[in-house]
Figure 1 (cartoon, helix red, strand yellow):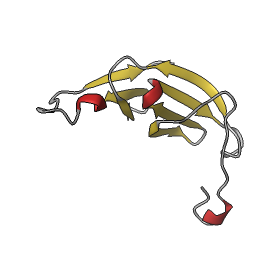
Figure 2: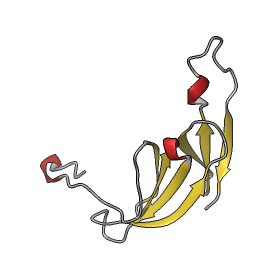
Figure 3: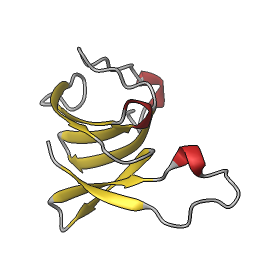
Figure 4: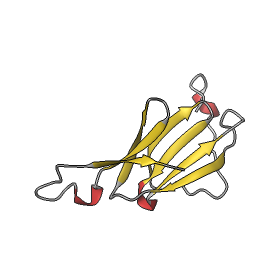
Length: 105
């Protein structure tokens, strides 16, 4: 979304990528975006060379834990996904521990 002119917002479609259920976003650099699609148990890596006028799928990581929700970077290199265990979060008692896993494309 162009911050200086939000009315110029356009929808970006990436061929072959279904981002329904997208939750966490991590802008890795100006040309790389990682997206957690928790309901699909996947992290997508999207890249652009057009300042996000278009994008392509550059990698997919299948997550292994329950309820992947967000991403974080460590030392500017490795990405990690938080498994928030969303299906059990409203249980009594709620979960008290959560796991983090390294994302590898």
